[in-house]
Length: 408
Ligand code: PLP
Image (cartoon, rainbow, N blue to C red; front, side, top):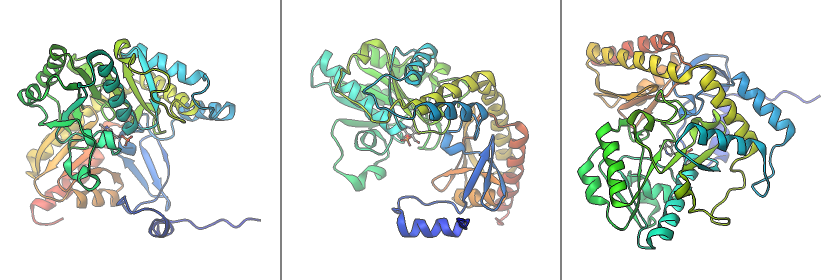
């Protein structure tokens, strides 16, 4: 009989040390299973998850409907590539077009790939209709669009790109929420403006309505495309299926990933019919993109979002969460600013102690995320409850009050 192998945090750390590339700095926890808003580690300790796989597990961990959809599809057909038709891909594309401004969809495997494909699409389309000089992409400082060359060149964080220079040419960055700077940057060499409605990785900076509406107007007036990166803001996170709905702004192209398949790897580019003409057979592709298993999962996610009213919950609990963070700010004086919308929230701290707070929370059974040294970010499953928010706030209150008294 095969002996059961011991596997614990120490074993995981030793494998990382010996066999994995050193591009991640992980927190000291080995998660073994999850359910709903909860995670468990290898010792059986339970946690409330306020990160949800960086915003991916919108319907919570291991949702029964998603498991059933994946199990059904896995036992029927796992993979054939895009040389052939498969039903879940077609059905998911139809659903996405029904729920959004889009007329056509391209599927890939991540947010980065979606942005990479979107950049290729807008360049190709504009080259066709306006000529080859119209190839530049204007995006925002502090934006994040991914780490492959096109997506990284669009990302407005020079420190992330610098070690990998030279970057592809044709990318310009302007300050976010500064309409005059955007207007000045867009000229007759610009093929697209690429923006996150709320900047996620950059620190959770909410786009102002006048900015996003103004960006739309500038693009329309100057004959440039508006691409919205809804990789983090999409799939109900802000209380609407896609954040641009709050703004009354319709993009020409949108990229989606993270929550789309509830934690399985997927990405998608959604475009209106005109811009979608940019791609013809052979222009772009992906072996796994639109894979039947992930598309079946995504169809289940869309169903669960609606049936369980998770977007309504994101609005209600997100509003409550933000109010509680604002009172924490008043009570402790340890928070510089509270930002965000729905269940995409951040608290910028007065002191550079976000990493310590994350570690202390983990010890106390709460999974939260930090951006840099002074920002705490919260991206829980959309099913999180006010009681779970209260539990986290109690811990944060204790930690931040102690820090203001010179403790922590
Ligand atoms: N775009 C945005 C707005 C993101 O937040 C992210 C990831 O955090 C990406 C793109 C990259 O997505 P992925 O990590 O799936 O490649």
